[in-house]
Amino acid sequence: MQGSIQGKVNKSEHKPILIVDDTDDITALLKGICDQMHLDTVIAHNGQEALDLLEKESFSIYLVDLMMPVMDGREFIMELKRRVPDALILVQTGLDDPKVIIEIMKLKVCDYIIKPFDKNLIISALEKSLEVKRLQDIEKEMKETVQIKLQAQLDWYSYKTSKADLEKIYMEKNAVYNIQTSLSQGSGFGTMTSLIELMKMTSKETDEFFQVDKDILRLIYENNETNKVMLDGLAKVVACTSKNLEFESLSIQSIFLDLQKVSEKFTSVLKEKRLNLQFGQVKMFHDLNIARAEMISVLEELLINSIKYAKEDSNIDVISYKSGNYIGISIKNSVNEKNVIPKESEKMVLEPFFRINPLLETGVGSLGKFAFGLGLAVVDNIVRKHSGIFYIHTVNDHSSKRIDKAVLAEIFLPIFKTEELLLNN
Image (cartoon, rainbow, N blue to C red; front, side, top):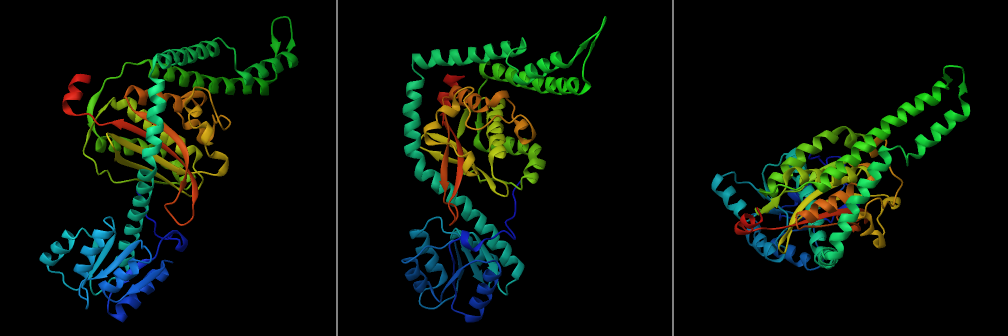
């Protein structure tokens, strides 16, 4: 599902690229390639000049030559990494000796380019680095805001796990049972009721039969199929929220692999809405206490939610990161103004049957596994059973120079030590 950004690079979306090279012909060539990609550039002729520029502004990528006067590339890279640990560096070198290349990579650079340059290789390296930079910016923004949000949610869930909360969960479960029973008995179907009333008004009674307009009857048949799907969704809600979960020790990598496989079923709708689904690199190696099937269902529901409400021709980003004793899994999608979640509704959207937007049961809206928009309530229920935290809210997306509104769904799952896993199982 990883998509190339070739042809989509927008000059306004990226900080400039710093070219550090003392040869005018090389800097002119690299600047020309960047101009063709609509990327701004700044030129420094040695490492010291580059460090001076770094005092005044920041850059998205650093194109650095190894051999330069005053301060060479190696010394500059070491100082740059001290100041900007996550700097993305592309090294230029005329030496293809494996030992030299190994030494270069030990400097924790992003990639290296052998002279004489191949234009296509430079473009490819820049595109890959820009995509890594975009994902870095997303992760950085999440980490900067997550501690305040996480503490607020911990306070909220501390309250919700009191006796009053346990009673509330029981009431929520019974509310779902009640509506399922009610709908199964035929009440509550507004459309079906209207169609039957229309049929009564327009039908003609004979000695043995009723004559019914075929178009009305066809609509009743179609509506009945929709109702069956909705009832099936309610049954899934009841089964999912009532089930005793079976936990196992799983890595975040295995969860991501499962979700990537699940996401393949949405290829056509992603293409239809011109959405680019991106999975960030998993850098943690902690084990989590997970009910595998239910957690994948939860993440699938959040992915479906992001596909439903993402604005066309945009990105959906799936990111993982560590925050304190929790592993965070986030799904972010850009939205139009009508699909933002007001701050005052952030907790309410987790309540059963609460909706901000009209219910979607056809087209893209029919993707959901759970009926009547109950998906987020189910997500909240399952995450709580994992001793985790879930919230969904609107953020300002600063991953590019153009600030967009985005909806961020975040799950925080506690990291368990081996002995804790044994006790909980």
